[in-house]
Length: 539
Image (cartoon, rainbow, N blue to C red; front, side, top):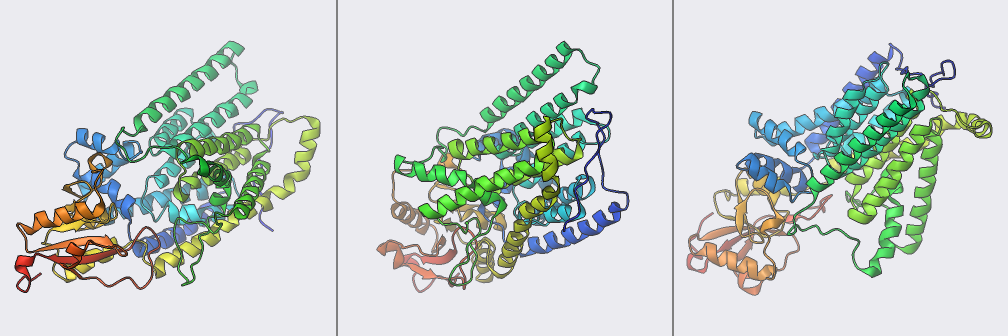
């Protein structure tokens, strides 16, 4: 049986502002666990090949000519400016991708340390949290701003539940959280409202008049509203952005809604399917899209939400925080963006925050009948929390082994092929869009993207050409390069079918990968030779 959760007592029937920290001896436990966590995430990061979205943000931050241009380029990314500014500052120290990976591992270690040292959970539950899928893999190994957002969210929980509540620091941390991503904004709003209600529960201990209390609540609601409107406006994509929102055609809307209902199940059970060849596909889910499977996934999701509510129900504000977070994410993923596992994981982060608030603060006053029911259910909360957290350990193990044995993304492999075949000085045309971008990022030199008609190290929907087929665009690009170069490198999808004209001039350089990659597509390297240079051109 798992260790019981630390439950703080009530003081004179009033919600006390004391935070029950792990005992002093837990510092050694936290340090040892942190070292193990740091070692695992470091090893996993060395196995991991960065994919397009990881390198895209980094190159936008590095290669935008000015801050004004950076602001313009970020408008197409659907993210706030803040993470790109941090990457740009890091680029002043080093342009090496390794520096970004090291910084991200440090952020992941910060997340683990906050949980290990300040979360009001048992040792078992703290270990289950930090070695779960999102903490040790999705938000630690894959370099995206979601780990940074989680850091601010967890730090806000620690600041709010500190022995001496740090309200100003909490507000700053929530503002930073809202500036990391769109889902960070949604989580920040839920946390802000939860903390406001938590403060309201403590009003009996404040020496404020009813008018002052109402004014404080109104001011808090106003600040939250202004921040939300400002952030949503700042992240709205331009009219020519590739993302348009919505749920697709009417025939798919019912399936889309059913899929949205299952999101908590995706977050708490993030297991990908295993292919017939034994490979694992990242960012896919073991549940299929058939009607029966969707119904089962929806029922499992409802059960998980209710189980989470039971865990956090000892404090009213924590229960409201959990309900607002689930409802807010349902609305976001259904109406604005369907998201993927890296977005859905914030449902788990919201649950951890709600449980933190529930067990770091005294229990709420309930009606006698409800208090009696909750008291009887108290012994089940610890095992239930274990039940909710344990599956993510298995998912982390599965994805970690897959990242070791499979190719997460093919960009680094393509770069090695170009270097070994001495092709890096030739013109490089990125036909696979946008998956040719990692090659430009890792080579630290522009690659010509026919879809955008420009040489660049990052992609942007603002340059995409519409109205022409991929074959026409690629053939025109190769013909133009043939006027000045004998040979051109072409980066294409492994299954790409070229036009007859171009196929006669292509020679494959890289063999197909032995196993399909964990994500996106497999790139292949081709060498196109101009007719006038056939038989004489050398790489």
